[in-house]
Length: 431
Image (cartoon, rainbow, N blue to C red; front, side, top):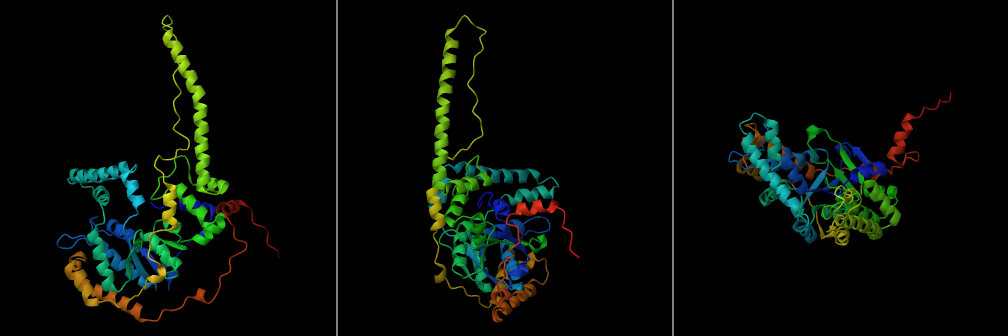
């Protein structure tokens, strides 16, 4: 889920913190990638031409292995050194949320999965491949076996990986803060909430989609929003995250305004509770009046045609804080996540074990079948040659390591101000 509405909020209120770039711009960078997020993406996206998942001749799903092998090679081709972080044990709060008031969501999701299976069986006799593909994708769920297979592949490829004590995004952020990597590759915006100075999105997207890499800078976001990290975390909590539902009636703009006005989520909550109390106080006289009218009407048996005054309907709008909303615990998870200290982790890229990679992919996992009798072993070997070359060659320096890029002083501070300037007539040039 990430942080609800944070991307659009930053694009509007802190546009300089977001920039799109070609993947080539990351040449020479080390990047920590959320492997659990990538695993799910590859199981969803890496498909055969008929929309079915890639499978071996024995029926084993291999979409995740194909995705990790070739997307990793793509990054290596562009001079990027990736390492992967897998999810560990989820925080207790996350389990409590699922076990508590969010349980209905779990049942709903499970129900949808079962419904998708039933629909797929019913639709098998209908020649609608697009519908079947959509139904199949709704059933995807990464397993422990998928994780172990990917970890084995990465080890054979010589690519470093770690299993986080808890959340993968938090460990990626820790590695970036420690200077072990340039940034964290993930699609979840809560990577910023965990303190990653640089978030890289679309890094493992398919090359066919031609999506630019989106870089989000946390320091620039804080500077342009004019708030410290403590307020930024409170803002993210108010927007809604994996540990908390969003507060009904508070969108991104209103959340930002409240944090800026009151300074902290604690004071915002005090304000919201006061509003609720004031609302209840206003209700009491009105309810008493309605009750009195009903009593008088019931006692007047002679006036059969007297109109009964109904109580006013409650409006669905307004701000509603969820009943289970432990924001203090969620805040603690963002400020003190369960991670391995970045300085303790040794990231080492090693030469691939080519023959073992070929054996694992082509023989054990049937890539010969997956690639439809193409020269799969040769393709895997060529990929391993690229890995060996990347490890063996000396890392070239980046130009920005020698020069400091000065920001433009005339750059607009807000995206909306830049948009407003488009309609203004150009000044006549001097001759």
